[in-house]
Length: 129
Image (spheres, rainbow, N blue to C red):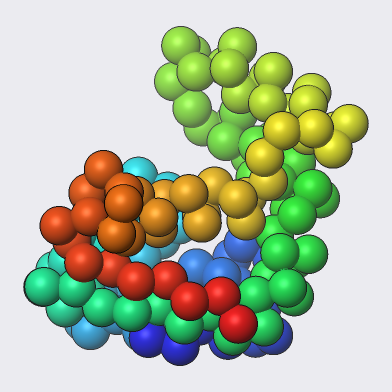
């Protein structure tokens, strides 16, 4: 799977770019669902696959602080009340460009399924280009 970082400039674009590579499955942007997709099935091959993220530097910028702030603001409008304090703290940090970005969260989720990750048996490989 070759993700083209230059094909998107925001999280919705990333969702569309990733979904473009799924067989008969459309991902709608939930990060929990993204984690599930990486386990295999749901449009990805069982037994593992490689993600080659072309122009990942562009994606790092596109999914940086402004995108993170927008994602957190939107998440606050639809999350369970128990998540509001945590999301609010994350949003406050993001506004000061502290903590992790949306790009970092996506990479962290992928790496869980890569060699050395807690779900390495899924046999996902990530190559940032």
